[in-house]
Length: 344
Image (cartoon, rainbow, N blue to C red; front, side, top):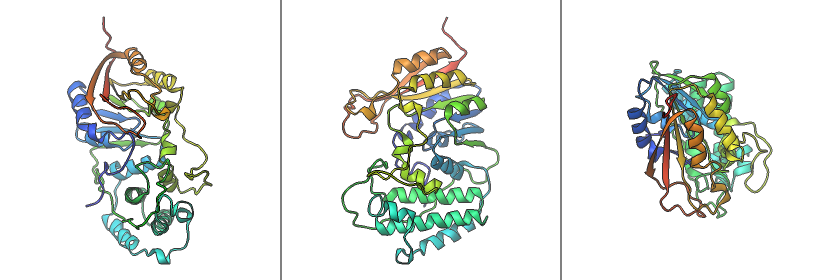
């Protein structure tokens, strides 16, 4: 048992599309050995291609996702015995014996039940102490922290993101701590370069064969959508504001603003690779400003065409819908650009 990498709720996750995406990449990209997942999100696209490449670059500017990638994909060693000892210790935590903490003070009775928030905060403090005293290495810390994230995501009083919590009273304590199932278990033949950088900066440092791009096309800032997860992962304990208890804004993406087209143009110009693969969903007749795409299909096609011959594939797909958008005939699109090859 335990959590696999796809077992979390995440807006824009490609889990239902990874077989289709993998099929196009493996059939259409020739003589390739390295793969870059540039806006990696959940990491499920990298996971789907784990047997198809030897070298991986995986990047996301959310620190919580950086922790999760290191937990699942890092080739650094870890001790299963240590993990299970700490799991057994965590399972003995009784909220009746736990003092009020950062999570319970801010999120108790809101994003989590009061008792669950006490336990979550106690576990997070325990993991921080284990890391600071070097009783666990970085990979073990990432596995345990990712396990905490996946576990509390299951009991969070939300609709799948943390932009707000459900206002109905929380009646039950449902938090259960389970360990994740790492994808790479001390496997040295795969090379993983895991990064937490601005994507436009990261691409200047690497030269993979295939680059997969899935930026956030709408105005939904992921650092705000998943602020509770990011907050608990970083454990800086910032002051929080507003009804949703968000910290001061940081990690705000240009791809969620009017700067999106310019950012994408700069990104593509700086890519050094053989193939560019880019996901796009055509959100038709959007009535929600947050759902409206900041880049149109034609904008992306023009920019990618400058880099090489571009083919567009499509598949019917039901996307995330907050209830204000007409998603009839919704399609997921995939651009495939062969760099340096232009139509005569």
